[in-house]
Length: 481
Image (cartoon, rainbow, N blue to C red; front, side, top):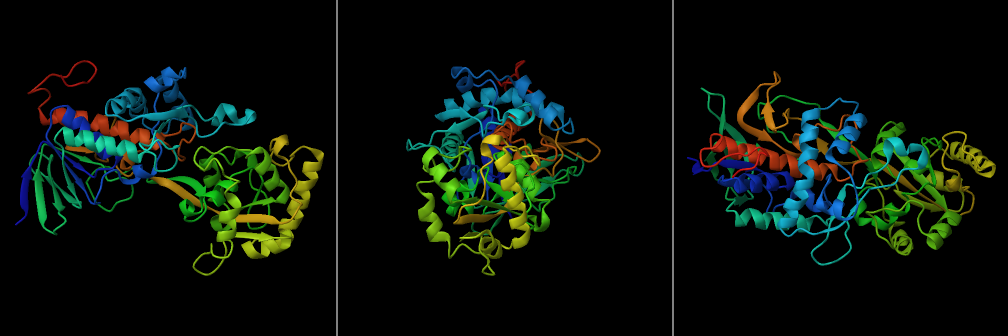
């Protein structure tokens, strides 16, 4: 017989959205049990750097005037209104206060930044905004990937202080439904000893983060990928990957260019483009002259993720990876050669096609104008001096999005848009707000949605648990008194 527990709210998974939901529900008076299949909290958020927000105290202190309304309008224009406007507006309206909420827990932010600055001709549509609240690591180091681990630690501590009970290494396995009312009244799980448990509750918040197999009975939405581009196992080849994120020469396996290379700062757009290339692979190539230029003057496109000493550390990792960085069949991901033909042979590009296309490109460089794609004149540097350096670029993903139909309160709905009592879904499982492409122009968006959807669901679940105010009152701002 399964072990029995009882609480007001169960949160399934303790990633970023789950932590936010658990804290929010507990702050609003609910007893909370949080299940987590891993041995620690934070989930994929521990790989991130920080959330998006509008009108936060950090932005105001830095004279960054971005209102929730402006982000809402930009977001809806970006998606052509193919997404739920009420959900998007609720998210951005909450986001600035969420930054203060995190700061009150002891989270410090290193800076508010943007992921990229758009070129003049594309700025109106794709300019990166100053919304990315990059977390200051607790050791005082410069932020980089995994900086947000400090944030999830502070959130875990806050949840524990509020009495949230974490059941680690205890994945949820199913929901318990009242057959008469149709309400969700509990969760099934298996603890780390392999024993089945059942938790009775008044509300369940599903926060499992991305693709999953569990059926929760809700309505379905299209599941999409937050496409981007990367080298395989990129975190272990960070200097090499960063060195190629420049407006050098980008081509398909026929050797032909496929986009203006000064747009490669927008990882979403490039991921989309590579996804439609032959074999779903692209190639980035630079020569000895370009490498000297970047060593002397710094990169043409500055990355806020890759190391600041990118080209000082490039050659050491390049030389270490050159003979070993290969796929399972022994094909290299990176290559170096004295001629373009040799480079093409190593990487799997058509040699004749590459040489012909580069000749045309070099002629455009000499003329000072890219009549094919209108790449910025300052980046029209010919590809002509060996050795030549090349790599394969593949589609990657920041994560998966969607699957579960929710409303602006994060209540799960059926395909007929009827709410399922007692059931909420947050984070990336519920994130259907990007249309066909992740909104990289408003950076920090996935983490921002996770935090704010979790907070909103936690508040609503606590309200449900108390019957709309049995042990307190909800004021006009939606806060529990």
